[in-house]
Image (cartoon, rainbow, N blue to C red; front, side):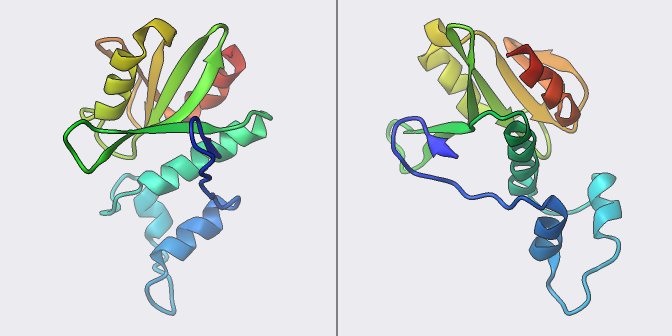
Length: 151
């Protein structure tokens, strides 16, 4: 996956099951309950990288390229980051992936404000239900194939 400005690439693993096992293999015997906890949203870990990996697999399966965008926060050593950018007719569709609560979405909000004239709509994917937070469309991750079909 490429950044929209610099040619910096991210790497993802194509087997999400293997990736999950590798992440949580802290002992010779991986806990058999990992997948149950993961599916039941009871795993106490930041799973953003796991969810992003699953999403990029779905994007790749549609034959599309995945792009992301980062830029410096003013007066900070940190960066804003939008997980995925797509062309939506003549505009952009930023897409953010969250593994937990959807209340904090500073990067996609800042992107939409900075590039408002170029953004068609913005989507935040998570394991939560369909909803709306101001102009941000909240969708469950399983709806991504339908979103990609609309583009």
